[in-house]
Length: 73
Image (cartoon, rainbow, N blue to C red; front, side, top):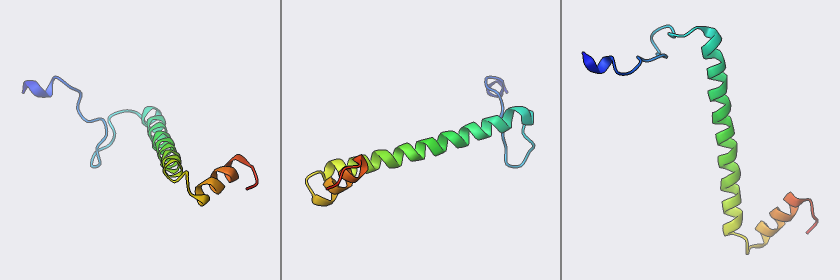
């Protein structure tokens, strides 16, 4: 069937052995895992920043910003 020849088949499958050698898919797995960890950290930091920005007029937010900057309130 012509639509199966347009694109490469699945490289990874839960039921079959990977189509690429371990020397290639292990670094790929570590890189993807590292990217997800990086994305999670950036997402949490950005969420924290947005909460502090929205609550910037409250005392607790000002104290948190000063604590983060190493200043005493």
